[in-house]
Image (cartoon, rainbow, N blue to C red; front, side, top):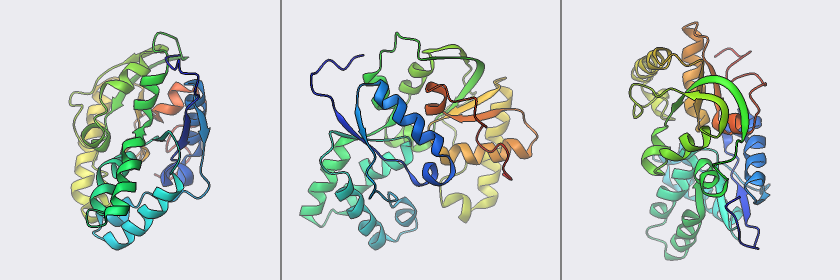
Length: 259
């Protein structure tokens, strides 16, 4: 382990709405990985949505109310880790701007923002990347979500972590910066455009020759899984936490569901 300090950091896990409601296994995988990285993990029971849907729809009043609840719920922890670049980006990038005209709350928002990281950022910094984490004989391709790449600056971390999986071969997509078309409310407001984007993304995934799609944002994975399923593709979809924690024996994202 890279953690050498006698102080065992207390990490709060921000579960996210999609993980809580659609794929709790991602939360359990994240918990297992954070403990493997030497953290004492707490899951605050009073956590809520990060407020991103309200923020993206321009409902800043409700977004601020939700953000206040989140700020209170996650005060006092060394770091806050989210298995989603989208939710982490909302807290890190947008919370301080929500309170730009409120000095007291802006200071609390900036404090939380400074302590918030995406899951693979934390793991890459605290796990021994020379140690085999698990075994998986598969060929995978990785999807970089827009929020992870552009808001959180996450690019190399997930690839370094996947390289610790014995037997896993990573095949990069032809264009690693292409959006999946989900974009939260974007897919609802502009379904035709969203559908065209994800269709092109699915073609790239299939053309990679990989039998598994891995990503770190469940919204993106659900969107791409649905498109792949409708195309009759055999590519299985997993969150990176599930892969690193050795939890790919479970059904993949979208399996057994009407996607």
